[in-house]
Length: 110
Image (cartoon, rainbow, N blue to C red; front, side):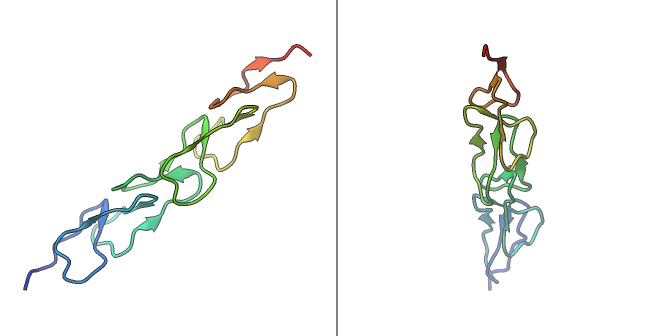
């Protein structure tokens, strides 16, 4: 009988007797060895295939739901000033906020 190999971090082994580990699914992460099930990537983060820990959404992006594989770019007239944002902030009316920005950009002439 073929033995079970140790599942390294970044992978999981859902079945007894599995000889090849499965690379952790997109939208999930596998931080430990010998994992049976991958962990769902939380809001404010995104996870690519084989991830060992969730990646915080970068400045200028937000991650509004679980299982994201790519961060969502902050839309026009909004801004995302911190890592790990789950929603964006509305730009003050007297300023302009460009797409994908982490800061309030330009004061408008009103």
